[in-house]
Amino acid sequence: MEHVSIDEIDPDPYEDAWQSDRRPLSDPLNATSVAITRYALEPGERFSGSVHAHADQEEVFVVLEGTASFETRDGEITVEEDEAIRFAPGEFQSGFNDGEAALVALAIGAPRETEDVRIDRIPVLDDREVQCPDCGRDSVRISDGESEFVCPDCGAELNLE
Image (tube, rainbow, N blue to C red):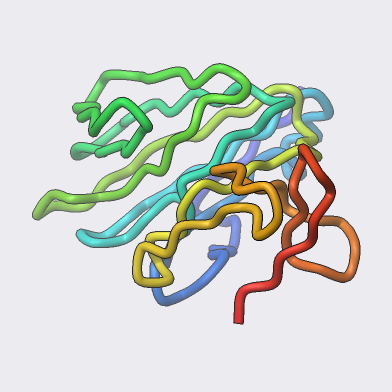
């Protein structure tokens, strides 16, 4: 059994410009099979900088305070306090705080490690669409090589500059 105080975990935002209080809980809890992160987002802040999908992981967001908005390929979905939403592997989404009050939520992903993240659009880069330069596929995979992205269909590489 592991027990932690979330307030004692240092914030670890991906990017200060769009996220100020992200606290990963998996390591402090020694969780090996699930990713758990607590977010406290001010109005205008985001869970992620991109509309993305984890092809190898399902995600659940539990809203503890405030209201979360999620952009999906089917439109925008609002998740209120004491509600939860699940995204299956491969479902594109990007969550953010579009309200006037703070948003506190837990993000839970399983399995913990995700190695196949697909990017559709990047709202924090002026809503830039990302597609394969060779075959035109409408989403690319985050690369583990020298390029930023790679097409999952044809293998073409893409760098955003």
